[in-house]
Amino acid sequence: MPPARGKRTTMNQKPITAWLLLLPALLLLLAFTHLPAVATFIDSFYSTPRGSRPAVWVGLENYAVMFEDPVFWRALRNNLWYAGATIPLSIGLALLMAIWVNERMTGRAFLRLAFFTPTVLPMIAVANIWLFFYTPQYGLLEQISGALGLPSHNWLGTPSTALGAVTLVAVWKEAGFFMIFYLAALQGLNPSLREAAAIEGASRWAYFRRVQWPLLMPTTLFVLVNAVINAFRTVDHIIVLTRGGPDNATLLLLYHLYEVGFKFWDTAYASALTVLLLLVLGGVALLQFFVLDRRVHYR
Image 1 (cartoon, rainbow, N blue to C red):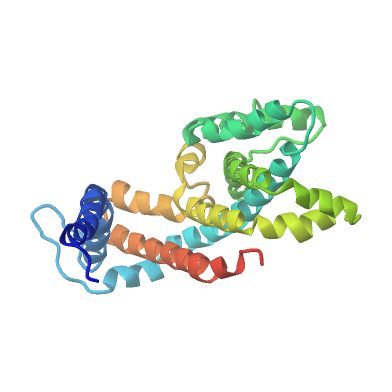
Image 2 (spheres, rainbow, N blue to C red):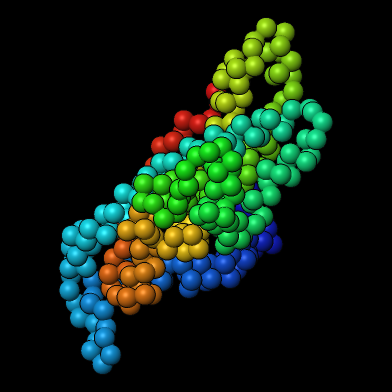
C-alpha cells in the first residue's frame, strides 16, 4: 500500500530540515577553511605581488625554490625529529600516568590534578616556565647541576641540545592532555575482565598486554592523530624559547612558514610551504583513518 500523502510530505521534509540545520556550519567551514585552502593552492603558482607590480603566473617555480632551499630541508629534518620524539614520548607517558592514577590509592585526585595542570596552561605560559628552568646561571637546571658539581650548560643556546630542550617542553605539555583520554578509556573497561584475569593467575603485565592494550587501541589511534597534528602545528613555545635558533637548530616547518610569510612577506613561497604541509598532514590523516583504523578494534 503506498504511503499516505501526509506521511510522504513529512519524509520529504526531513532531508530539507537536516540540510538547513547543517547550512550555517557548512558556510563557516567553506568560508574559513576550504576557500582559503583553495586560494592558497592557487597563489602557490603565482609570484609575490610587490607594490604596483601584480602577481604573475610562475607555475611550479615556488616549489622548485622550496626544494632547493637548504633552510626548508633543515626545518623538515628538525620537524621529523621533533615529531618522532614528541609523539611516542607523550603517548607513552600519558598511558603510564593514566594507568597509575586509575589505581586505588591515597592522593589519587591530587595526582590527576598535577598531571592535568600543564594542559590548562597556555603554551606561551608553559614556555615561559621552562625558560626559567633553562636560563643559564640562574635557571632551575643550572642550580641543580651546580649543586651536583656539574659544569654550566646553555641548553637553549647550544645547537646540540636546543631541539631536545624544546621537545621536552612539548612532551610535558601534551602528556597530561592525552592522559585524560586514556583514563576515560580505562574507566570504561568492564571490571570483570580484571577479576577474570586474576582468577586465571595472569600477571599485571599479561593483563595489560593481552586485555587492556587491545581495548585501548581506538583511543590510541585518536590520540595518535592529535599528536601528529600537534607536532606540525604547535610553534608557540619556539617563538618564546628560541625563535628557531641557534643556527636554525630548532626551526620547525610552521615557524619557517611564519617567517617566510609574515617576516619576509614572500607570500607565494609561503603558499607553496602551506600546500606541502597540508598534503603531508592530509596524507597522514588518511593513512591513520583508512588503514590503521581497521586494525585497532579488539576482536
